[in-house]
Image (tube, rainbow, N blue to C red; front, side):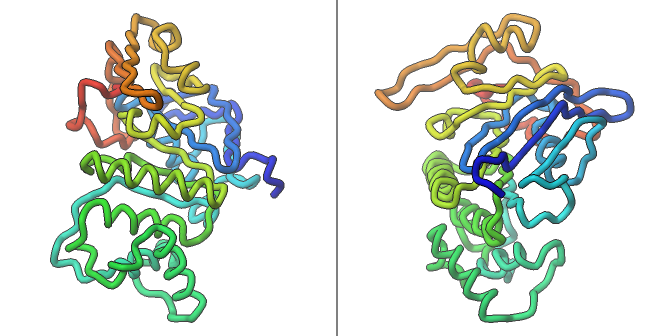
Length: 283
């Protein structure tokens, strides 16, 4: 695939459940190495977009392609980084075992040992800075260390795109920064596109190239300066939304969005973060 071709292509994409349109008319081409934030209120369809690209949800109409091919389950061209969730401290699975599952596909177990497999696991562990605790049981590691291992697992098949579903949730500010900086370094070094679902854009703002913002069955695509404005979001929501930007220093600003209401919840959208709202969230 030519590096000028998009790694993610969505053309007039629509998702509908039981006659209810979740979102429609989504058009975007995402380039290698691009960092795209996926924003919007609970229930608007952020996680569903990732599930479309993973082949878990079918479009009602439109086209979805990854690396020039139709989306399908189990594509090795996609790496998936989930939320951080606490792991039982009694879990005996080692860090390198978790990473190895990325090579084994959906099978929960250990693949056949081979020099190539071990070498690839060690390579990616070293890349993310997790080689030093790779043989520890993952249940005793910190949240930040566990997320490094999940990123390594997502990278082990050398994907062209990383789908990140709220990977900073439940992490403290220091670990959030480390995880985002690691993802940014990986996408730059390996030319991997990143789609990053989040309720809080501020931790990733310095790295974001473009935004997909879902609300009221629509999607707005553009740079943060084009989308996250009072005028643009008010037009998207059909009511007044206030966007306040506070400059912290020369290179950092904080964005606050007021008046963005929640979408109606339904059974098919898996944004399970309703109890983590913060006043500066974009939801």
